[in-house]
Length: 335
Image (tube, rainbow, N blue to C red):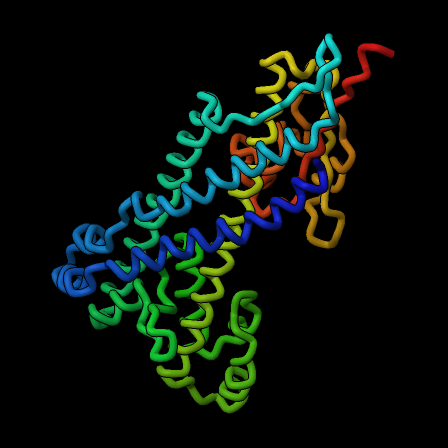
């Protein structure tokens, strides 16, 4: 079960990542660019935000992928339980019920909360981006296209927009553009920059010759694309961790509620991915064992039901790569 769960995380994280990107692309394609442009020109930022079309329904694809990951996790959990037998000796068939009320409640509440968080952050980001463009006196259409992206002649798809980025990431992009315009060497320290442009930036700094507007636009487009991928990767892994570990917890509880497993015989073990990227707190938690119903305790003091627990602080969950092994000892009571 432990190996299966770890494999499922690696399988579903990219699928949830793609689902988020599909939702953002759909919103960008449907955005009313003409209306957004007109509203920016009038100084009506709220109407421009509305014209972007941040409909929560657009994230239905992310909801669906989360539900599929949840069901896969629950099925893998029960498949991994050791064989159990009833009092008469026949083998007990343990199944996972994704339609169980508690399972459906979690999926509904979690998806609603996640989509609300994404949409609200997008609105904050869009207001900041449009306001900054308006204050700078930029062409309203250029500001609108910077938001939703421009059509790539090769792919025929929009690219390089800030739509989908967090409010903080949009601010990073604006600062990066400013650094490039001022030939600030700090532009070369941006982790999300496309290093293929470093030579041109270094040459411009050495010569004291400003970069052209088209050059900066290309660098900024690459930066935004990388930031969007990073954002999608973060959502994909965080949501996969939450859905798969919650379904593992749900599947175990369902078996307990049916009397197929004694909770006293259930042990949960925290496993960290030990490498240069692991959090110090999670490195320390590696191998921590708890009985069913007890939380894992981080050195930070945070209490987690499992890696990626949505109820835990973001500092303990975002991009977490840990996983929990559930061990059931059916022979414990007969030794």
